[in-house]
Length: 154
Image (cartoon, rainbow, N blue to C red; front, side, top):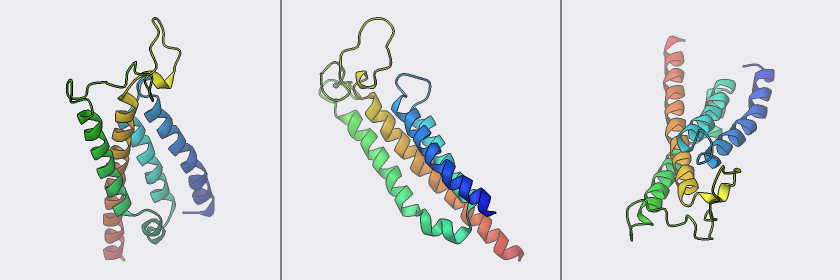
């Protein structure tokens, strides 16, 4: 790709990441959540893959780091589910506790406070990281097979 496309991809990549994590963080208040935010972040990876050469992508983005992110997200989600096991699986023990994400929810319309959902933001973050890792690995495998087809055609 041209230098203009690479420059714009590098510029937009930061905003795509910020927007993806915004969707993950506000998943309990607005439409969206972990899966949608993770898919947006993985779209940023696809943007970089389209803009740069195969060798540079292999140098910048490692499959092992994306696989590790997938594992960390899955493990975090399971830990968040097991953490409330004293009452039930996925018990929202942080809600109304006064701790992180545990402020009391007022009656009526929620003005958009992020710290009123209990364990839901933790689960959204875990799912977002897991989807980012999974879709990122899929995009990199697709790139690998495209590169293999170019080599055979030349």
